[in-house]
Image (cartoon, rainbow, N blue to C red; front, top):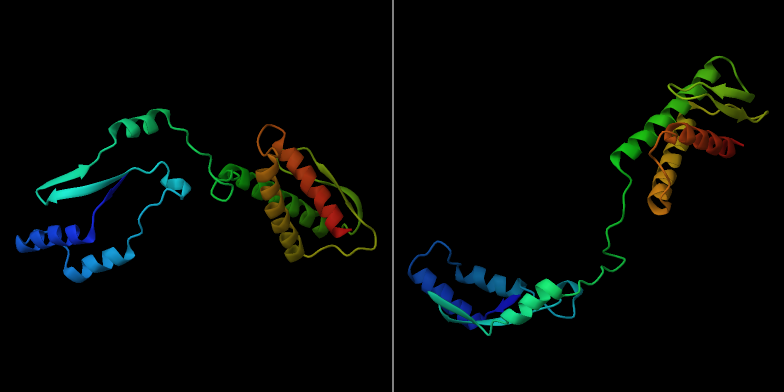
Length: 197
């Protein structure tokens, strides 16, 4: 509902407030700036529908708004059809903080297990990645490939987290449940193998 008030009437009401030194009166330049910046609602805009416009009249002490479309307002409130938001303004489902924490924790564990294998002298071949509170994950380092540096592994980990978080968001991939940790560890290990091949 928009209560329209002609600028001349608003100036008269404001002047009456200024004359009585009312604390809610605007200075003349401020009021003119408000007029210049105000954008009236329009029924063409989806978020302004349905739009009910009433015109303000009367003296500052006895403001009247006519006509007040009470029946139409009641109908819009109780029986109106809310339009679905456009795709641009529709809220997107985000992965939860717990999901992001799970992605971060599991991928860090896989990286730590890979670096532990490297520190034991493993250069290539298939070996188990020992992960806390999860079954070991098999990992194959192709022969002839140099073992990636910790910085390279972290870069790949960040890429995976970014890709998987957006896929989980758009495709509804599971990041919860009893099997989420081991499945995610296997998925990340497989993704790393492909990235390093």
